[in-house]
Image (cartoon, rainbow, N blue to C red; front, side, top):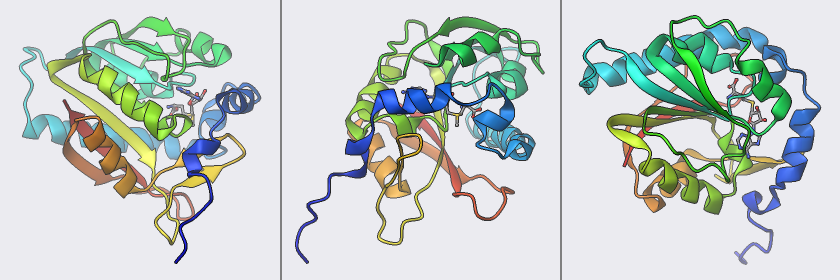
Length: 231
Ligand SMILES: C[S@@+](CC[C@H](N)C(=O)[O-])C[C@H]1O[C@@H](n2cnc3c(N)ncnc32)[C@H](O)[C@@H]1O
């Protein structure tokens, strides 16, 4: 077979197109979840279960069981901060490039007793973490970074997790029959294969501690996978 002359799917990513798309989306759970707001409950429950299992397997040294500081990356309107991370962390910093979404986060009603800390209006490709985090949560946002930018971002995260901390990634998985990543023109993003993610983790010198598929989402959506990483 002749080598493909097509550019790699992530080469098509254009940040200004992604931001144009997201600026046109409503500041609601419906907007964040692409017209499937009903999956939010299952999503947050699945995340809580995954983290509970992770913490049972690797107990942290936090005395009261709560984590000091988390980061919600590509946070949108703070759906995950409000509905999940606030139950785990004392403080949650937020990173989100779309100003109108970032503005919403502080006004969200938190399910837990945690509060919102710093809000960085920034893409992850430009974010340089300044704090030490027990948890860096990345969900449905890493497809806006090229492979090269994603590896560079993960390397920056390595220096920003506490000794007992984790970097969590929760992303759609490509279902392409040829095992390729899929470029989506609508929001200028790429959906990666499991294989590609694992390769990029290696490139970033990250250890994959635990991985699992989210259950209970409607058929017809991409499968969603969790990864827990450590430097
Ligand atoms: C599908 S929404 C997910 C929001 C949130 N993680 C959730 O699950 O509710 C994707 C989010 O990624 C943000 N985003 C777009 N480009 C980004 C980038 N370069 N870095 C970080 N986030 C980005 C969008 O503005 C949007 O808020």
